[in-house]
Amino acid sequence: MKDPKGAIVQVDVSVNGIPTAIKIANSGYNVTFATTSDYIVSQLKEYRASLHRVSRSIFTNLLLKGTLTVTTDLEKALASSKIVLVTTHALGSEEKIKVVIDLFKQIAPYLIPNSLLIYGGLAPPGTMEKIISTLDRYSRLDVEKDLDVILITPLDAQTEKYIICSPNLEAANTVKKFMSDCVSSSVIKLHDVFREAEVANLLLVARQAIMKALSSYALLMFKQVDVNLKNVLNVSECKAATAVEDDPIYEMVINYLASEERRLPQTLTFMRTTVRMRKMLLEAIATRLKQEIRSTSRKGKDLRIVCIFERESDKELMSILLPKKGVRIHFYSVDELESKVDAGVERIFPFNTNLIILAARPRSVSEQTIRKLEEAKLINLGCILST
Image (cartoon, rainbow, N blue to C red):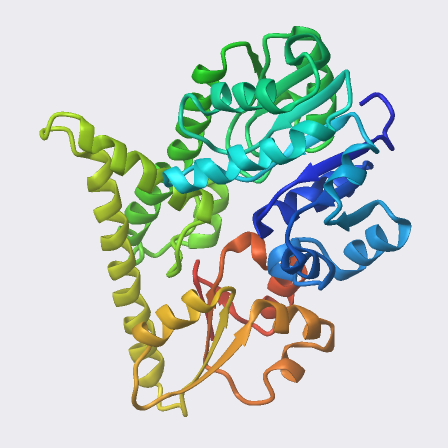
């Protein structure tokens, strides 16, 4: 880890690990993304702003320099580095835990002695014990002597703290140097008990999800107050309410905790209430959205709405929320928009637009695109940009 151009092998069997691979490569490391799926290989190579979360020029540069590569040859990839990062999440069902355990079973025979094996996924308490047991069974190494196994908070999680957990303090500090290139060292904490760290990771993500839901719900109450909501959000550092699903990591953790809550006395229903509250929040946002559309319609304009979406599920949701009569609605994907943003908003939307709705997670839309939209004299109202 001391070499800023050190080689790291990241193993994942989903597209969720792609932004993490790019984040690490963009921090100065040579990353080999190893997967068992040809589909994921194609997804990594084909640029999409919403997935890769960097500009096309940065992504292209990483590929051209060879800083970021991808392969389905696990054996060859694992032979090239003593630093292995596994990022597939194990949360949500027994099947997902099995996928992660099977992944460690696959890579176990190819691990090099004295390697750092880092797991950066969210998992139920006790998963790390199963992982170590699997390594003991299928690896040719003496896991206790020849391998340092470390658990970290996923690098794609938007949390206030990041945990590095290992019984070996030296290994933990080595991984801290690596993580400090991706997140501030001031938010990194060291720990030495896996089960406690697994629970702490879930709490860190749950805290963000719950606080976002609460602050977003409260923000809706102040929509009628004569204040600049953009300034309010900047001062409070709260997140604006959005008419789309939360980050998949938030969804995963909240749904998991709600299901675990059923084991508690029936009087304890906070997590399930939070799930219901988030549904109420969506309904409230939908009502606000319809009010904004009606207000624009009263101005006597030929109402045209542009809806910018990230995922097909978001497009389907907006299709339900938006009116069926009296307006013309044009849908654009985030990736389609990002690829044309340099041409200017008037080139992207070659017609008079009264309302632009961003149905996408904020971090999937580049700052450049937001600036271009604002240059078109649009007012940012959280999830709604309107004239």
